[in-house]
Length: 341
Image 1 (tube, helix red, strand yellow):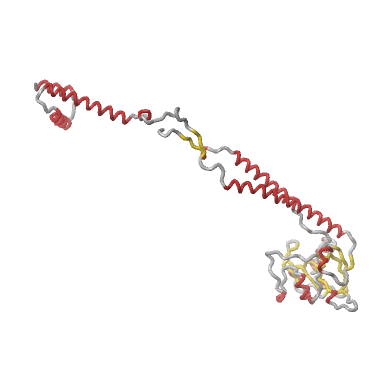
Image 2 (cartoon, rainbow, N blue to C red; image 1 turned 180 degrees about the vertical axis):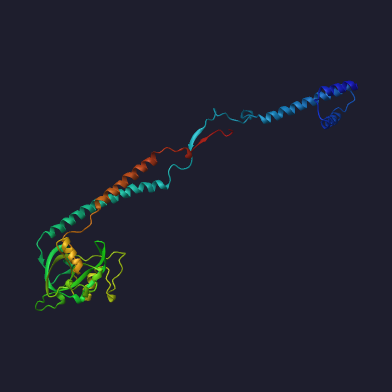
């Protein structure tokens, strides 16, 4: 019996190390615990079948397929779908839609402003070609806007002792001041001098002639004839500082304030001169104020504003159309697959 058992052991074993041989002999002694040769054969067959089942189970775990799961559903039975993730459009689309509408409204408003400004300039230019009017003794400030840019002629004497300098102002790249001097006209019977006095904007002088003693030629004495334009008072903007009459500092022509300081009528006359380069150079060198030319100097940029706003409206409308018509990109899409894939 022993030779048979030894032959069966050799048939079911491979060359092993001494340690492995010892472990195998110990396992065999635990498995083949019967003294009967037939029983030992049955135990050996049962042991081999158990090892084969363990090997097959491990192989299935390593090579398991989705179809091995009884709850698995085939993609044919449930096809994949392309879906969009999130909302189609957000609040930003509403803001983008408001931009072309707002730009179109502003462009239309600029069309109306262009028409108004063109007619206003034409009205002022029509006043310039008319012969100058003699300035009446008494002027109602309420009607000055109706005579804005109207040429006038006034005769009187300058009150240089009440001269006011507004500035600084730049002219041809040089810093200087605008000279405002009261003009006291001939006093009529029954009228005081203040009732006939008006303010005259004589023009620009260089900063180096700020003191009157440095420009005697710019201080005409006696009766003078002033030809200029009657102007509507200029409004102060937000960035201009307030005048400081106590220190003799003026930053903008506040007609009401200057009239109270000098005791004259709140009327401003802008003295004009024929544009001439030689004459301007002589006046600059001698400290004689350089008057303005008799022309309308209103800015009219409404046409370029029209192109700007309408162009913005068209471009943003195209952007809005592209956003609405654009298909979702790959980042906003995903594939909904079967649950068990």
